[in-house]
Length: 193
Ligand code: GAR
Image 1 (spheres, rainbow, N blue to C red):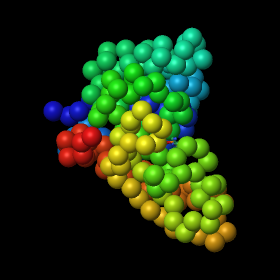
Image 2: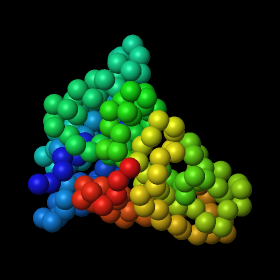
Image 3: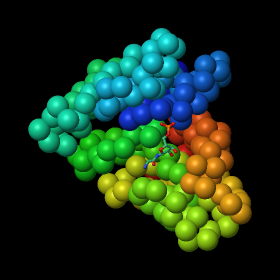
Image 4: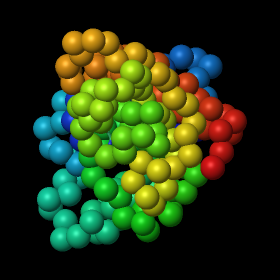
């Protein structure tokens, strides 16, 4: 049985797209059954719907607190019988209660070689620090931001003359490669928290 996966996005959704494409493979152990965006005009929503996947907007702005917003997402995920949650450019902090509920069943992709460069503006900070390498990490989500155990990482060089954009593009290519691989490992039970 394929694992039922819900993806949370906030924008472009290129990582979501990589997961949707990978899940089209017959022997892929997961299927994408729901996409939720906290931003109404996230461009990723269109792609999901175009692929026959239910895509819901749950706007954080419309909820009185983070906990109540998270609970609305939890209700939607459970209604779709989601078993694994994949964060893909989802730019909201999650409440401890939500993280606890999905313990071991929620993964995230972050554009740095964690534990280096948690948080925002990872590429800008890596260039400014004169790093020779940058990269991305897929990890289990734990209550501390960008802190859970890594499942897969990919490394790329930082090249002379790199801007934030050129480095981000080089890393993004690797994100699209390792996120489907990491989701596969989790869905097959080969990577566990
Ligand atoms: C990706 O680079 C992802 O790693 C990053 O946002 C981008 C989303 O792009 N995530 C974070 O910074 C999480 N803290 P996408 O919407 O095209 O997948």
